[in-house]
Image: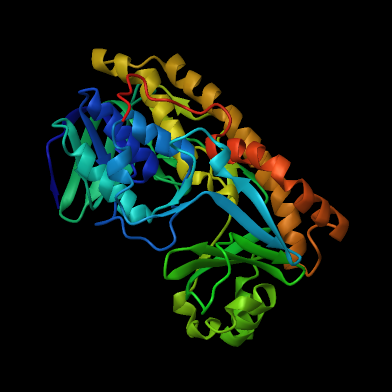
Length: 407
């Protein structure tokens, strides 16, 4: 195995997901030398989070990337509907938000990440190293000074003023920094699979929820990215019952899928997402910070994961870009990023945990709420939609790019 000579950067980022790629773009845009490490050879992964909220579209506009982003193959939605115990409820209406970013986007994450990589490559100080995994930290006198990496043909040391762990919920660098997240118990998991659209499909619907279970139907044009909520740890029992039993459970919750559910013929078509909610007590140490899922794993509920990760990246860039240009980052600046971002994370994770309790009732064959409450919610939904649109689409303490150019 060959070992390359160490290289020097202002910032090295482990993980080429949304947090890492956006942070790399932002820092390179400021003229800083930044390397993003991605352990895979491409961004093509099944069922990665791809819900892009209006707040993220606004950030892309601030960077002058909005129109080029919207040229990608994506789906725009102005409302989110759910069918609860047979009652169709419009739970969010993004059209109530200020124009022009008054819609939600479903964009395959690999397309989004390839887009960010292309845009960032225009900056001469940006570097993306694929097939390069961060395997450990360089720590000197208590300060993180960079990373050690492994590649198919050797290894490399990258020394940097700031090292960022954006390597997801199983973060290697978070562990190397001596950080363990506090885990909040989650009673559900999610099975993901693709289904073709049946003839005469209903209006776009996020999910079908009843005592028969919960099935997700995310519109992908000619198909659904579908999911089914199951009890935590219940996958082995479901698989033992056979693919036919799975088909029956899907159609019990969403009968309109009956004509197409037979396309699920093999368990290889199905991926299980082990739902987690956790959070580091401390995201940083001298020369190091964790962001995105490495700092706080979010549930897929409300589709916030991608957007919270990007918000972390923007907050971090805003806070430390000027310091990085001088060759130093005060640890207090990193602490300030955690203080700023932890509030919206805590609020959303609390709501997700409460929501999971309701979904767990559906997986146990019970209604998620009394029928009268569902009817009341449907009647009140026109009044609630602007509130839910603001909360889901923009969020608590949305970030904006320092020195954004608008467009």
